[in-house]
Each structure stands twice: as structure tokens, then as C-alpha cells.
Image (cartoon, rainbow, N blue to C red; front, side, top):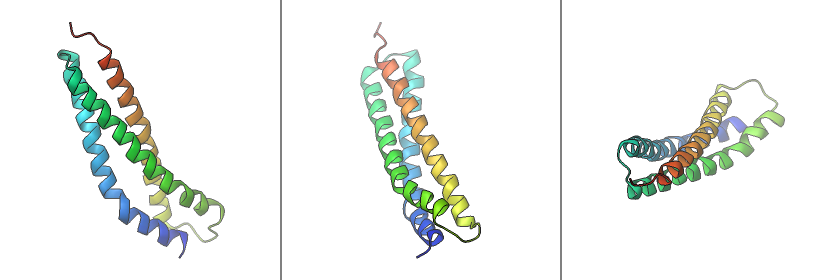
Length: 118
């Protein structure tokens, strides 16, 4: 199986479910941070922190699964430029960016949890 075929199979398997789960977690955490700036709610922020940690977990796991094939496609794939591999790299970079954003969101949740109730 070529690197392009493996990339296509991997994208079909994980891309959509991971995006939906991570997006939902980050949307909840972002909304909780926004609401917490007006009225402090530590319980909701604890759930938001858990959601952002889960988003970090999903994105890091997905990146860890995708990185080996991405590097192999660069160093050992000796065919022409394949559109599938270009899309694969774009998705991988997006996943890495989402992992960074998830981490930043988690940090913001921690900052909100440190705010006093009054």
C-alpha cells in the first residue's frame, strides 16, 4: 500500500469524528470562559477545563497517529506530488494547531478557576 493510499484511509477513518468531538469540547470551553468573565462559576469552569484537556488528548493522539506517515511521505515516498498527501499535511498541521489552541484554552480555564468568587 502506498503512502497516498494509507493517508486516504487514515483521513477517512479519523478526520470527521475527531473534528466534531474536539470542536464540541472547545466550543463548550470557550463559551464557559466567556460566561465566567461576567459571573464566576467554578464548577462550570472545572468542566470546561476537563473539556479542554479532552480536546488536547484527542488532538495529540490524532497527531501522534498521523506524524509517522507524514514524515515517511517526505523521506521515503519517491513518486510525484499527490493531492491526497498535500491534503493529509494540511489536516496534520490543522490538528497540531488545534492541539496548541486546546492547550491555550486549558490555560485560560485555569486562569478563570483562580479568580475569586467575589
